[in-house]
Image 1: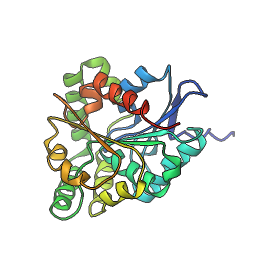
Image 2 (image 1 turned 30 degrees about the vertical axis):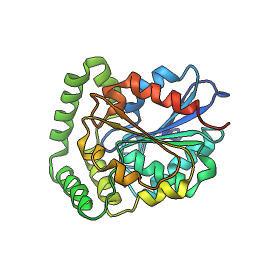
Image 3 (image 1 turned 90 degrees about the vertical axis):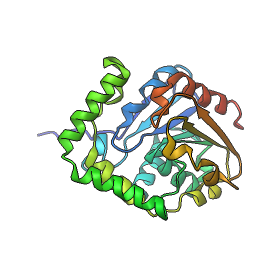
Length: 253
């Protein structure tokens, strides 16, 4: 009996010789959350969207930050064909910081969205409380409520598109708990390359204190998207995508 082909942990869309963007999703979601950006950019850019451990095609793989970062590096090496723009949302932002700090030569530019709160000190308690809630709540109930909310908030077509890979409360819980206590700001400093930071104006948990998180970090461009929450790439997709294109235009070849 023939063995089943291995499932890829990333998708690749766009011209093979075009500039590359690697997208890393947030907790509970999968790589499908980047559908608005990939639909808008894949005619001009090679778009690589990665599933993190505990999510999507890696739902049965326990999340560890080092392993997650290594998986993104593999996608960069095998699918991105060079030094991509690396874009991370929420949990994906923290993973992207880790990748950029360890492999700065592999990252042409770094974009972090909804990831400007250091998960240490009192913030660590908030991260751990959120992880604990996700761990204790029935996963099927969390999934049903979340999927219904996405469809109501974004409409049936977009709501279904961004959740096509599923919803992963258990994987998200472990991931958030795993990064709690990690010092992330110093990883931005260690990267040393160009950085675009995006926050939604309604995402108070990450917008407030962003200035303190970014203080002293070189090469930062800080942008706020009006009327956007934590999923700023979906709340205001055209604005978010426009900021990516604008940033790419400033990067050295």
